[in-house]
Length: 529
Image 1: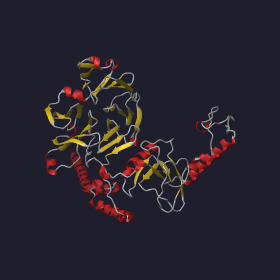
Image 2: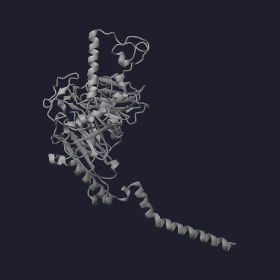
Image 3: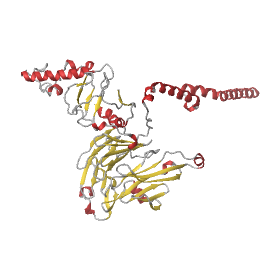
Image 4: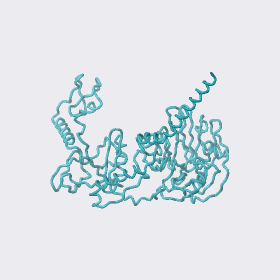
């Protein structure tokens, strides 16, 4: 829970402007965070906690002498992205006093040589571990009077600070990422490069001229290559016509060449410059390579033949025997640097990763339903393995033989349309609506595209009158929205009333036609009689 709650504050905290407040929520807990200097709550004088402080020693204000609870971040709650030297300042004074009193009582008992407490159920001696895990004889867990939920629940929201060198202010204007770089309608296609960078292929969400939209359905297709530090290597923008689903079928990298697949054919680009080398019609072999049925890796040309790997061109001895004999092969992929990734289903779902030197690493995935639909994997140039399945992400660092959980579900912002890409320092997740984020293998947030506009820097006078100004602006926007909303934007009750007013002529006409039909039927029956 704390891992998810503190991921956003630890990343966005150094980038917040003075006076800016943001919020994150996990289930029933809500956390608001902002960036501020360490000052005394009584006199607002600066505080200077020692980075070597430990235990529950309070921090005194040099100006007024007020006491502030101060301790190191507890090592029992490791948080990804938070260093071990972080200081927790401003906890609830009563809770901190109880913790210090409990620690003092435990020290006095150990000094006096008092007998250890006994279990209330079986009278067995309890050690320190039994106070948490339970009695070894009967399994009962002792209950402490000061551990009740009513005493532990704070009466009001608690404000506390985390002080760390990693939370130093970072200017938002020093980022190397250009504005609008991660801007697309649907989740992009991605392919890793051999040098650690990657290529994106997406449809941009920029507006096109109205006259052009009326004549034909025109889209802007963007292909760009990024360096490992997110600097743009090259960028191509093309205007294409036709349905949106036919504009970006796929993307693959073959060392020095990049292949873009589209409805009208495929185009080969130079990985270093982005220059177009050739254009051809997309053949069945190219589609097979796009869907993992064929691959050129390890200097070989391999393909999936009846659930096994078949070497079309090259020496089969270059592949380990375990991969050659694997049954139920579903996909083969070329990995950065010329390695090979094999996804198969035989006694569970397996992923075989063969590096360019021929070394083999095998991972057992075991999806819940045994299906490979929606399963995606990616391997970085240095051997970091990432697997995405059922909105969960598993990661294995170079040299590790077991996948470890990294992200889990919507609480960690993993969606069904997320696209996975493994990098040397973590994993990328791309999704529809300009979403682009990078996470460390332990789950810490390293980069966020921040598609929402940041507030402008404000002066002290603007900050002082901000609440009143916000209320005025909110009321003005509300009035404008009420006068300019269309029928499809009105509330449900208003939409029902508008619909009734618009349909009364039709209802009157239907009533007249019904009456006329009954009158004509009556005349016909009377004439026949």
